Length: 82
Image (cartoon, rainbow, N blue to C red; front, side):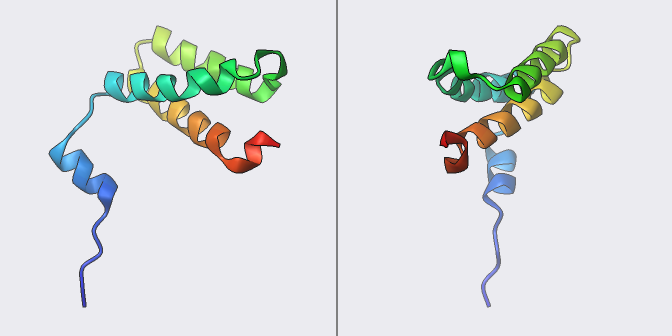
């Protein structure tokens, strides 16, 4: 039998990203998703964007990156497009 390899674990070992890099990538994913319909930004999305901003302001880029990645994943999901 073959061995199951986690691509996330492989990338983390071979190409580790800093928290700031992860945050930058997540924000670049979020930007077009939020700009697509700024008048329709849901209260929950706006609240999460504020939380991300607070994490950054508090000097916690890893936490901000995690939140931003989760939000981008959620907004990129086909169900998010109505």
